[in-house]
Length: 228
Image (cartoon, rainbow, N blue to C red; front, side, top):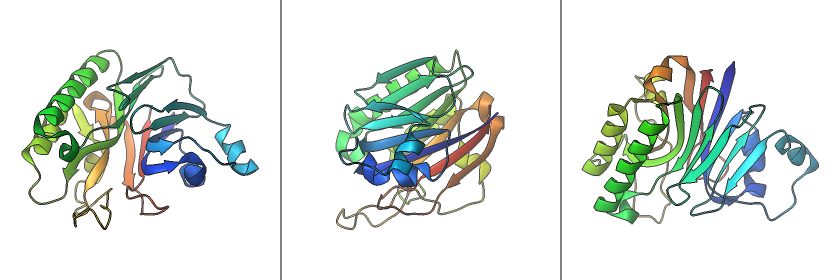
């Protein structure tokens, strides 16, 4: 069975403004970061499409959601003060993550958070293959990457996770998923958003892409297709 995953950080938008672009990708599992529940009515067409999904909301912290279509959910958990949502299915576990940034957390707390997250993933993949999607706040494709972020990426791969986009697009340079706001003082685009797949499951990857910028978010949507 082929499953299509979408991950997209909406940059603090509400669902009623983002439902149409989210649904346009026709994904089976949609992981959203930094999203707020709708407060305005949506069209009948959008409601009808949304009704095809089981929506799980996490309003703690930055706000996350996972929309699931035509798959049986076995178990749900929300951890790390609302930054991590995990759904167990029959043959795999899916994790939606919105990790803290080094700039906000500082070196020590950032390192501690990623260390505990890796321990969590190691335990999780003892029982199921694991797919993780979301905003990792581990920057790549920029000069002078902070050593804390270099270590976070290196150690995630060390415990047996594969960067899906890197695996499927080994020669693509300058790929980015995030463009800083104009008033942020940062003038470089970078990859901040990823799908990671446990190594034993990585040969099941069909494709991994970064979609074009659109729809008023500083983050670009990322797509993963897998044979499950």
